[in-house]
Picture (cartoon, rainbow, N blue to C red):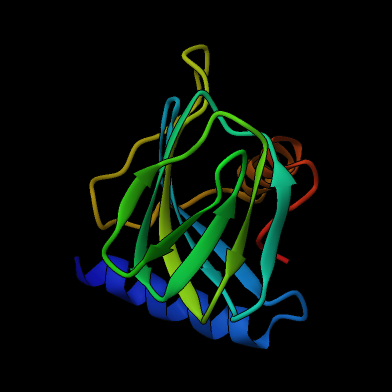
Length: 144
């Protein structure tokens, strides 16, 4: 769990300095499974985007609002399955959350890691991940 704590601290520090107030760090990529730490500075948003086939959001620190057909506010320690409808995310205060997604059963790429390890991705793999994030979020990439 130390690596997760470190990733959370790093992500919120970067988000606080980023012009868009956000940062994402892919922690686990194993076939269709992805776990990403996302940090949003208070007031920062992830624009409306589509959901993957299955996803959950666990707030590790802070609070946020997920807007969809029925908006929901999540606070530290809460976990929720994400809607299958287009939605956006807004930080109500400086927030760090763990996004777990299952993107497709047809994904053959794997960067399997044990829990707590940071995967090492080549520049080409990172570019592919960012392109996929852009596609999945309708351009709402969180690493800029």
